[in-house]
Image 1 (cartoon, rainbow, N blue to C red):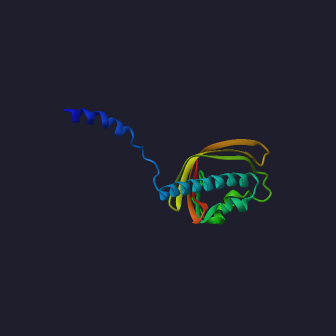
Image 2 (image 1 turned 180 degrees about the vertical axis):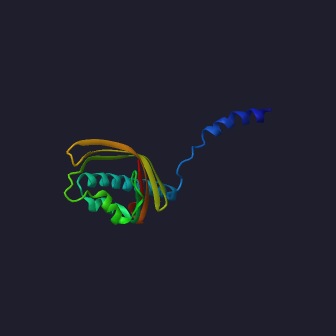
Image 3 (image 1 turned 120 degrees about the vertical axis):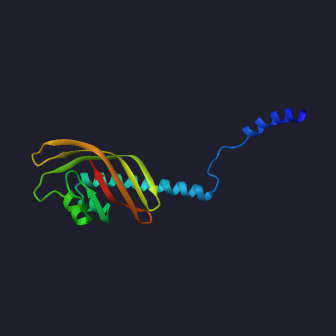
Length: 160
């Protein structure tokens, strides 16, 4: 009986001294750090895309996509490849159309090896050929590819 009472007294103390699960190896810590690094690169690319669009730097806009990328504009066919993407984003010669504000706000970025996806909301303002400003926004999903170490580009880009 004494042993049973002693066991009942010691058992709760032993249970309280057990540590909670943590990253317990250098490999797990490195993997976590690597995922965060990749997310940071994608976030930087998202910001650079918006800045390039507002600055009418269409070379940078197009370079944000993989060579075989596809975009899914509203009320349009799927556009494939950098030439089609350039034609979509670049206003026609003589156009006064300009994006004056562009912001992408990811809700989640998920890294899956050398591919990733993010989704969230976008918003912006544009000046049309008539000189009038319009506001717009919606939802988006982007699939990313790591085309070389630490270089992430958009492969699929859809918005509505």
